Image 1 (cartoon, rainbow, N blue to C red):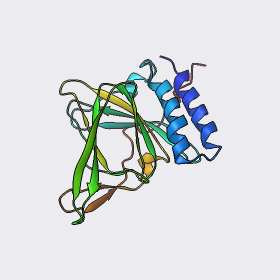
Image 2: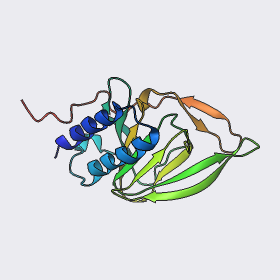
Image 3: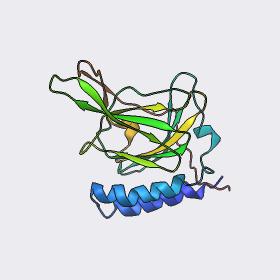
Image 4: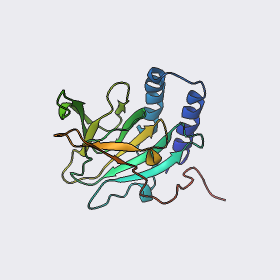
Length: 193
């Protein structure tokens, strides 16, 4: 396992965010950093890549102490999916293992939500979400027999942010705070005594 990869990513993203960049710069330069992190699948500990038989897992890998960003591994069992939901902050989703299909949803004049474009994310690819452009989507593991893992980076501590799921027929929102599957965040770059 290459523990230093996550540390390097966190350090470089912290340095980028300390310049107070625009979202456009975060999505161009930050995306390259995330692509470097997910280029080789040899660094995520097994304990943070375990799927659950009934629902996807969200494991916290790193939470910035200033709440500027968080890094999370999403682990999907076969065919597992999210409801239609938002994030309220910018986000980058990097595919580490398997494939996921994301579908954007758009509110209609009657308040309902209609599915828009879908895209399949393959290992090494990075997608983005943002309340400034497209923040409401649903995601599904594109495999019926394999686990998929994506590394998500958000512009805040996503497990503590109040967000919403949407009833696509009525447009009604239900607020939620996702939390994390792991009770604590291990120091993933600790290499021993």
